[in-house]
Length: 100
Image (cartoon, rainbow, N blue to C red):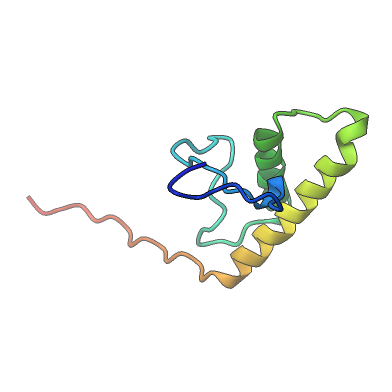
């Protein structure tokens, strides 16, 4: 346990603090928030890549397929809500050559 936190006997594994590092983002997942809205296919593809990275499965075994597919659906829905709540990025001004 970290930083003075004791393990409570009634604390489930899902309630325990977890250390997560975001120092390395999966390069296969592209940024979806841009000047043009992301398509449904792009959002689902990013969710699929995220679930693959987290689970360690490229394609789950039949016994894990339901949980895997449910996670993809949940992350897709959450990502779509996030993208709809954020303002679109502003377009960058066109580059102009500097006078010499």
